[in-house]
Amino acid sequence: MKNTILKVKNKDSLGCLRDFLGRLLESGFVDALLVPKMLSEGDGYVQALVKDKAMLEGVNPAAPTMAVQTARILTELNRGNLDKRVGVVLKPCELRATVELVKFLQINLDNVVTIGVDCPGTYRVFDYAQMQGQGASPGKFLKKPDGDLFSCFKDGEIKTGEASGLRESCRICEYPVPVNADIGLGFFGFDFYEEINVAVSAKIENEFTEKLSMHLDGGSTENRDKVIRKVIDIRKEERGRVFADLKGKTGSLDDLMQVLSTCIRCHNCMNVCPICYCRECVFESSVFEPRASQAINLAARKGATRMPGDTLIFHLTRMSHMGTSCVSCGMCDSACPNQLPVSSLFGLVGKGLQDMFEYVPGRDVTEEPPVSVFKEDELHAEAEN
Figure 1 (cartoon, rainbow, N blue to C red):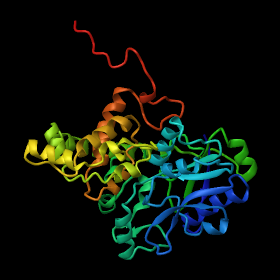
Figure 2: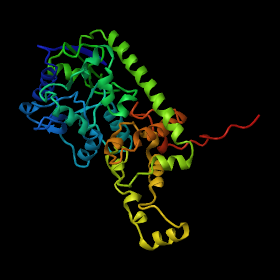
Figure 3: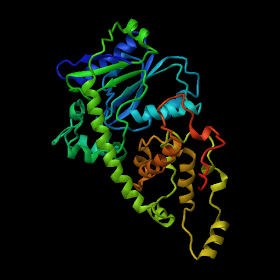
Figure 4: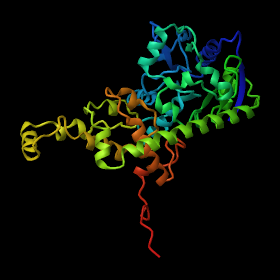
């Protein structure tokens, strides 16, 4: 990766980012951009496919909320013939999910330019809307009485008031920066209102410099590396506390059932998950359609039976299917109507599986996921001495 520094004028970081994205469109480097764009009410963001530079007003690559996992949108775009080049702004977890879906042949990156952005964390859509309603300015970045979330980019410190509102999956995420993006927009280690780092991969370096007439001068990133390490250490410490607490609550099958006791099997967590990509799902088939006779017979044997049933097997089956590729984006938590700790639970189980197979989802597009590879000597118990 080679990099250059964008100088922000008049502390208008958002204008600087929009101008850069506009140059990608104007130069013909991309034909369209998939980016977070502010709603007309100013209380949230949705993903928008932009062709006209003038429509970049309201676009915010660093939007501190995530209404949908962009990797899921890419799977939809790839169902047709994507014959135009699209630049896609991706948070680190969205980029990692995209890489996993490439491996499962759900996404083709031939006509996709990945634009990864540093992420300080995100707020739930509802929480963000509430904050905006309490006086945050929709035309600027989220600001609250106790500070500005994006001030953390300079030194890696997030104020207590800011951090407490972030989604738990963000507070424990150890991937605050994008990995292997075609273009990386780097904020950590810089004063966000003065400078923005742009890193370009070797794959597109020549075309980038030619079309955008931008010289990649390789500005210093020493402070950036130090700040990123600090952010990761803070998040790992928080993750340790969250996982330890969850382990204590799920030590047995009965305990796990208690944690998931309010699950209504609405399938929201499955429907928003980028890794749950199957077109046909057993949980949406006749196999799990409720049958009155079966339910009544079960109630007769047990005296009473829970309705809807099979909630535990639903979550366990999902874990077995996608645990090694779970990127802990937290969308399942945000979608759960009963606020179950789905993301933390899947993160805990997923981390164990990923460590077992020495696999990091989203790290490398050429790294084969464990579920697609058979190794004869895998997981054999060690012989006793």
